[in-house]
Image (cartoon, rainbow, N blue to C red):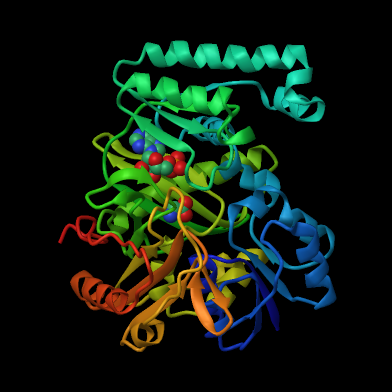
Length: 449
Ligand code: AMP
Ligand code: GLY
């Protein structure tokens, strides 16, 4: 069996590593992959967003199953294209992936489904006006231009009336960098100017969601959804901020642990009943069938769990920690999702705890340098119960060098969270590259232990 994994981050290395352990011994390809994926898969030099070339490759090589990691190709319709071509593929179609790609849509869906979430309003041109603007060019259509301006004015007025501060979210995809929490409304005005006038995030920020600031610990709940059945995976917690004690700007995620001590088994059942079931039903009412992973980002507020966002894919780095604990065959679970058989499977999980510590390039999530040689990878990987999963790494001749912001996901499993932390940090300590940065408090406060 030939499998193509699309993407080149820590999530995709984790997927390749776990798929390679399948008793069905698949032949793996990863596009574009990284230095780590090449341990178990053949890297293919096609970008994750280059849908046409991925399709041509999968057709030419007679790939039996394609698994899509990142959100950009999913939102751009890679799954639709593969299905049209008669290829087997894991992930939601574009209309379903919109739950991540359009935050205004996701908010409306949550309202329709009666799912608890922050109070919010949407500002900016409508979807139709945006489509018109991208066809005619924003400056050329006077009517649309007026809508852009009106949206910004209305957003400003709204923010000015919210003394308690607001969260401003770019509606479109922004690689985890489109959310701004502003306790001070004057900062929010600057963000609006950046997004809606200076267009620092391009089209993604033409529309914004402005919502109330919620407080509380965060948890990620990921589920496999096969169109009708929902299979909730083990819980995880991510650490989104760059700095220790959750300070500084948001990142893609600086570390994770699984399970999350913030959710009990019975909480998970409640989340399934009150979040996943109504959302999947609401989508179905719109004629959208969801197949793939649905990821709910929750905040445990004093008023109960509330949804911050949905993602249409595995969380990165959450899935690194979750897969570290999966004892069953991942391939079987993914195929059951595609075939609508999730009611027939039972996944086995290690009772241990997993911790993933991200090593990043100095400067991330701002600008950073690439091409720094990495040492100590083999020594770290030789430690017991440790997996050194690669994200932004590449080969430079025989050497492995940095090639991205998040460079490595050093993941370990232990009998206790303390044990797992010690193993992950001991491994990270053996690895070095110029400017390496990691948070020293991953899974510390989350664990509550
Ligand atoms: P999102 O991409 O919507 O999950 O937002 C990224 C991060 O921003 C979340 O993980 C939270 O830390 C933070 N965030 C999002 N929405 C809110 C909110 N309403 N109140 C406080 N923090 C939020
Ligand atoms: N770790 C957050 C995300 O995958 O969106």
